[in-house]
Length: 113
Length: 113
Image (cartoon, rainbow over all chains, first blue to last red; front, side, top):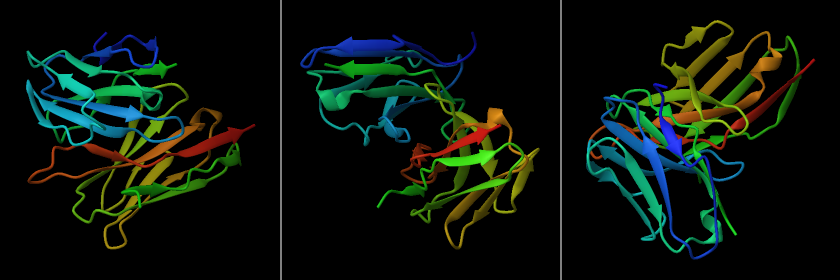
């Protein structure tokens, strides 16, 4: 389809494992955002890319979280040494430009046991 | 204090009722305002932008009061399909800002037959 695609849709990992979450934005979209949504809460900003440049990572909760977008399209959010509080839905959104409407993917539901 | 505050509800209303949601935001530099709709276990989807002059889209009316930093959403003639969580969203543009979205907690609406 033409929308934002995220994989995997669900991920279960044991505490301490590393995980990698993938986002395929809409083709041609320059801006890419990652958000974290805890149960019963609204999404919270994690990081922002403009093409391959990570211009804002102020929302990343710790240095265990790392995101990249090396070729300016697909992005990966990596969480090292996962902890139970990392359990959440991770949403990716893209837009034609930073101030244009953002289109969200279905999210990856991460559960840390 | 959260940057965007909403009453989480839930709001339980009968079909055909009119219901209003309110939201306040703390950053006076905020420049763009939106209402997103999120169905259970789905991604947020843009419902409508909110303009200072007020705007209407069918049964939905959004209002913005910049002086009071207050946003509202009115739904007339509620349908069963309106049942969802409504997220109040603010986007701070400008120097140093990336266009990231700041979400409220969301207000849950349940429309009953």
